[in-house]
Length: 330
Ligand code: ADP
Ligand code: NA
Image (cartoon, rainbow, N blue to C red):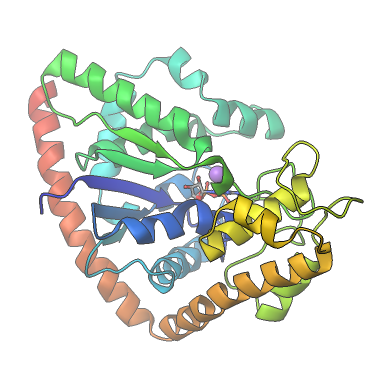
């Protein structure tokens, strides 16, 4: 396989993905499978950097795999596996910890945000060193491109820095990866607080459209989305964050530019517009939900797919780790 390699992952930190994960990650991944040698990981080791329930984690891991497949990730074309099934991730992360500066890690804004929110003592050392594990995930596979949201840009830059540093200290070993940052409209905001990123860990559920929500629930959440007192369907994140968010969602689901939608809804009210957004989301998520429920009824088949795929990941990762051990004198 001589196509360029891409790698990306999602944490199994909730029972369902949301519309932000779908637009920001899965939809894009799905479209890249033909042109790239794609590796999609379920990063369960990242999920244990915050307190977790063992049974919930195991269930969320399998459910996430099922959602990858239901959303169009094809295990016959792409490698799709659970991170903890390939021990080289944790092993390389330890080695990379040895060449990461303490101050350098401390400058990662996601850790600063998360620890500021919960207090430094609530944040684990694992959460602190999470970007180093992410660098290991990427570097193990000679990844050329990492398709991520802009929230992950700094972490991919750390992976680049570590690859270059390792190569210059120990000899050419790693491919230096590049982030592929999606366009601004790929970032989806909470429907109730349209200035806050939609996140699995949000405090309330009403602003999040889950991929596995029932169609009627999706429609209700979108109808109740916060907009503004105006009546113009126009993209303006500053003045009209709610409407802009819905425009971004409709644009992604219909595959048409925002400007086309603005023209289409000129002179029409928010009611029509919201109904069409809800229809577009339900049309896409309905079949994904059905397929998820079908696959969930056959956990043995899902485990078989994951085990087969993990073998390829294991082979690639072990070869790279052996090269690393040789280079550093282990
Ligand atoms: P969350 O922030 O909901 O916990 P993750 O951190 O597991 O999600 O992110 C998984 C993927 O989904 C990443 O590629 C991330 O950039 C993308 N993503 C997460 N939230 C959003 C969002 N609101 N809009 C667009 N993409 C998102
Ligand atoms: Na996140």
